[in-house]
Amino acid sequence: MEQTLKGDEAGWWVVSDAGQIWLPQGALPNGTATAWALQGKTARQIGEWQGKPVWLVCHNQNADMTSVRQLIDQDAGLFQLAGRGVQLAEFYRSHRFCGYCGHEMVRSKTELACLCHHCKERYYPQIAPCIIVAIRRGAEILLAQHNRHRGNMYTVLAGFVEVGETLEQTVAREVMEESQIQIKNLRYVSSQPWPFPHSLMMAFMADYASGEIRHDPKELRDAGWFRYDQLPLLPPPGTVARRLIEDTVVLCRAYHENGD
Image (cartoon, rainbow, N blue to C red):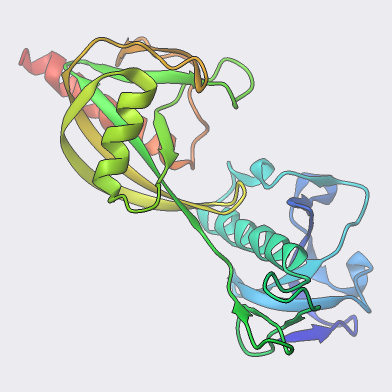
């Protein structure tokens, strides 16, 4: 339930607006509301971290507002809670008015939802499902540079699920569209909430089946096969992409050492 902060409330503070988060001194604020000049603001508890409440405050602090990516290399649980807060703040910001009748909406007091008292519609935060897949060919892994990424980082292939698709169909389509190769032995690994802006990443591993790499220039700057011991710059630890790469490297090394 939302409440107006008196000042003595304590815990971790996710202060977010327009997809950004407040990180004074580069860290998530921790302490009392008064210590961070948040008294009088509206807040909602969205979880607990290290035995302390995690509060969401939908507000722009102007200074020190940045991307939640700054917390990727922190503990996974803290990053997940911060991402949850950023996604909820953006949901509230984008649902001030009802999409059916245009009337102003209110936030539910009992659940994470926005309500329209005029036409009785109820809105919940929507998540965009997407897949991410590591592909192995013998002692090599397929890595690519995505156009949306800065720098020289290489990572695995990924894409959004389309209407009417299964996850397996999405993986096969995305791999074909981006690299023109076919895969086999697809298996699920894990998932990760990804607040950029509101995705759920579902991670897979697969083996190469056939085809020659011809990357899609609309999506990728480059793509190629890399030996497990000759890898380029990779995604940071704590991301599901990095886990997929590390797990695949283990298989690549075993393949090389066993001479399969």
